[in-house]
Length: 212
Image (tube, rainbow, N blue to C red):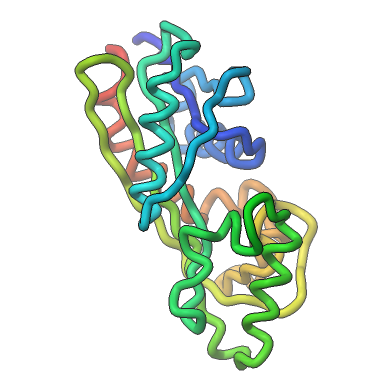
């Protein structure tokens, strides 16, 4: 069994860590060697102008697959787009989650805007979903692609809880565990997260992309 080179199209260390941990959890860890855009100095500026998570994930995967510097041994690129969708806000921030407070916004600025917009919404009406689309594309002329989707339901707290995670994690409360994502350790979060759900789906199709 060959080990396949897989490029994760992100510079977010938290995302990279979660991908690797979940790959190991679902039995793919021994089949892939993971690199990321942190390993490439010429990563392009990618304009994520899609209207859905799936469109943005594919935009990123295709752009990275076309980089001239990608290791010739790499066989696939995996890219994701994810965000938080709040029912009371009509699904916002949605695909704009990473830049909700503007281009270059920090996690703190995005969270501040979110909580401000929910200031008049009662506790029982702050339902939300973490949603992720993961795109996989093969590298080379005979390109094939797939997209899988994962959701995790929860609610939004009005004050941050926990020090772990990234993004909206301190405000995303998961009722079954009575914790925000930022209060969970990696093991807990990776058991129930939207990324785990999507990667499990990815695991079903990934062998078709890996070297035999």
